[in-house]
Length: 120
Image 1 (cartoon, one colour):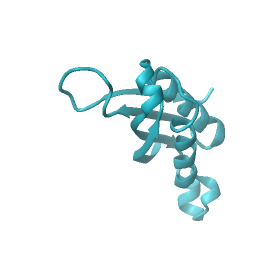
Image 2 (image 1 turned 180 degrees about the vertical axis):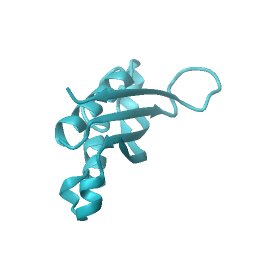
Image 3 (image 1 turned 90 degrees about the horizontal axis):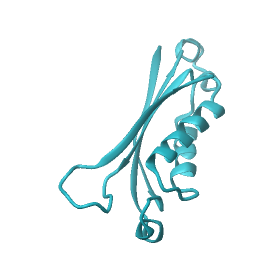
C-alpha cells in the first residue's frame, strides 16, 4: 500500500488529566501516515483521487484545538476515525499525537500515543 505523510503539524490545545492543562493549554505535535492507493491520482493528476494535505491539516487542527479531553489516546482515536470518515480513499492510517511538555517531573523528549486504524 502507498503512503502519504503529513508530519510535524503543530497545534495548541487544552487537553490533559490535570486542571492546569485544561486552563493553560500546551503544545501538541501530530504526525499522520495515510495508507491508500495513489496510482489513480498519479496517473490522472487529479486531486479528487487522493487526499488533500490542506484538508488533513484542517481536520487535525479541528480535533487537537477542539473540545478538551483528558487523554492523548482519545485525541489520537478521534483524529484517526475522522480521517477515515472524511476520505474514502484511505484504507488505513497511523496517527501519532506528541505532547512535548507534559506536566510530569523528569527528563525526556516527549510523550506520545501512536495508533493504527483500518477502514471497517
